[in-house]
Length: 187
Image 1 (cartoon, rainbow, N blue to C red):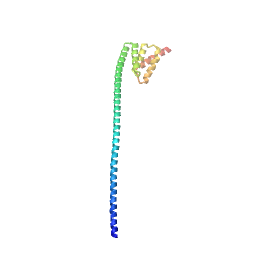
Image 2 (cartoon, helix red, strand yellow; image 1 turned 60 degrees about the horizontal axis):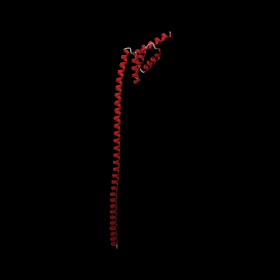
Image 3 (spheres, rainbow, N blue to C red; image 1 turned 180 degrees about the vertical axis):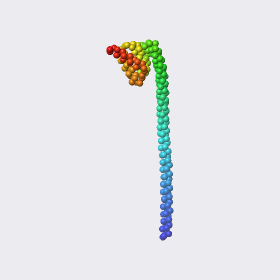
Image 4 (tube, rainbow, N blue to C red; image 1 turned 90 degrees about the horizontal axis):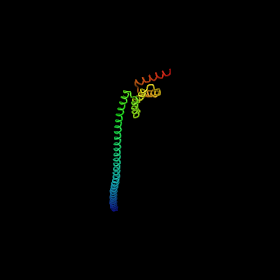
């Protein structure tokens, strides 16, 4: 009986081993099946993501290209405007230089009214041009040194010019003349 039990135990052991092996085999098959399914799922997901990523990159590239085109257009327009402005400023500077020379020439010919008109024109184009401002009131003074109604404008303008850091010896001479003239009237 003990042999019988051993044989039965051996048979059971073989059956259990076979069943265990079959179970392991089934588990391995299922594991392989799941691994293949998981790999296929990852491939599909990767392909889908790659497609979306590629589409996004293409959209981004298109957007960037359009932006660069717009920037180039704006840059060209800006450069054109800057060049036109530079040209206009150069032309204006040439005109102002010519007008200033003309005004000084008119003053040397003692044509003070014409000179003042030229300096006023320059000052209208360049309100920061202290030289034109000076020559405008200086030519006004030289037109008629005794015209007292101009004195306040002249002295105020000279004061404004000094405040802007502009000074000429003629300013002091004119102010001394005006002071002496007003003093003689007051006596």
